[in-house]
Length: 116
Image (tube, rainbow, N blue to C red; front, side, top):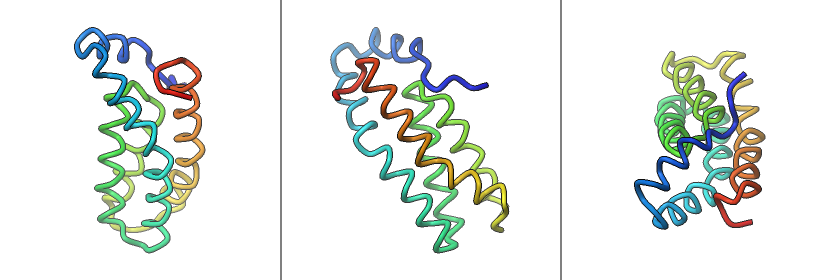
């Protein structure tokens, strides 16, 4: 099972960036659910090329913020969207991404990395 939030990644970022990390984490958290919802909209529009690019972006930012589970889910969506055809696995992955983004946001807020 993948860890929802890797605190060691965030601790390393804190050492490197100091208080600047607060603003970065807040930006990430504030747009997280909207990014996930955008993936759902792109799938509904069958825009798999843009879906792949947006999933890639979400993957990168999530991994950077220690959001391992969300990063892995976004990576899977990116890979499936790259095939160019909609599949049950892609639909399932996109269907679950908003809930996972919400859980990640809550974990960052509850653990004090982002403002409530």
